[in-house]
Length: 123
Length: 123
DNA sequence: CGGTGATACAACCGTATGGTTGTATCAATG
DNA sequence: CATTGATACAACCATACGGTTGTATCACCG
Image 1 (tube, protein in one colour):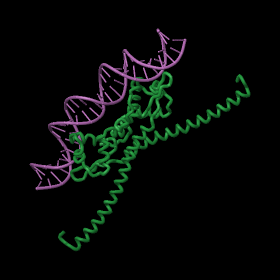
Image 2: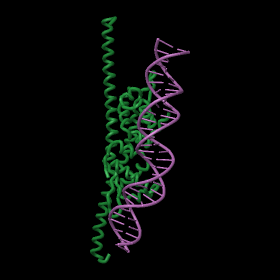
Image 3: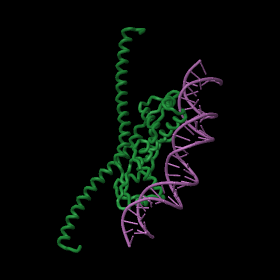
């Protein structure tokens, strides 16, 4: 139906070991839903629902070939998640940078203050 | 209690907009739970539960300072999720590489077959 | 030590999720 | 065109989740 890849859906879809394994297998882009279902100790319908979740999250696509539908992972979906995490870490690095700036500037302020207090006692 | 960062917990924790925002704010590592709760249109207890989920996932830590507990995000947790996604994309690139190999080899096979069929008609 | 601010936890409620079975669609094939 | 293989979907059940309110812990301060 839809392939709306927002962060909520992407991360939620990745929060299940079976679904992550499907993503992994579908990297090869060769198996249909029945073949995929063969790998897991659950009903075919359950696996089909997992595939549907991944599709809704934009992490996989299905392509009709004959009477089967081949499942392949959509790497752009993965990259959406990755770019978010990258963003967080970039912000973190920026924060560390800013922190060192603050530390150095407060050190400067501190030495400045001690110089002042040396010249003008009682403030 | 525990800080067991497995992929299920990490991705599940990141699959909620409020929790992602908490991770973002806690990058600064200055606010306690009350201050965090002030930013969201829900009860304090709800935010506290979100923080607990993030802590269980190993995405944040709490450090006692006075009567407060300062929340700061644990970048190693983020990196765990990122490394998994990196792994997927690496496998994907490897698969593309292998696919081109297959394509070239099948091209070779194809030309080989056509040569054979030219010499031996009827198979 | 009593009070207060900050955090934790328990009980409860509605809804979502992961699993099941059964039925319907839909394309190839005899 | 009837059958069969592959996929989709609906109904149902148990459990988990996100939210609420209320109560308990716990560290500081007068």
